[in-house]
Image (cartoon, rainbow, N blue to C red; front, side, top):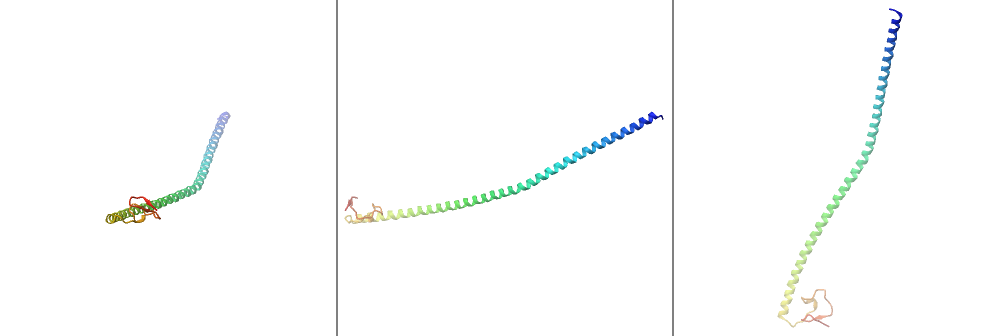
Length: 150
């Protein structure tokens, strides 16, 4: 082999070595860039997890507050329902009492009417008259025609 062939072989080997070195360097650089991106993503994920943990506490506190308000609302509704039932019971009781008073008033009026039939000339005070309300007390007298006398 002559010198020029040897030189070309050496140049080719050096060129191949340089190309291999360049490929190796670029591959290493690419891996480093990928690793750097992965590390940045890991850091971002860790930051997101820390923020989520921090926010979770606030969300749990708001959930607890909402549950407490719901419980208070249910308690207030139950109390309102209890009071409504009590009011309905008292109203029914008042209605029944009023009906009994009406019956007693009708019975009293009937007895007084019967007494007036038996003894039409007697005078009675207003509180004993069936046609005078029970609160019409005083010195005035009412005759049989419903007129006031002094």
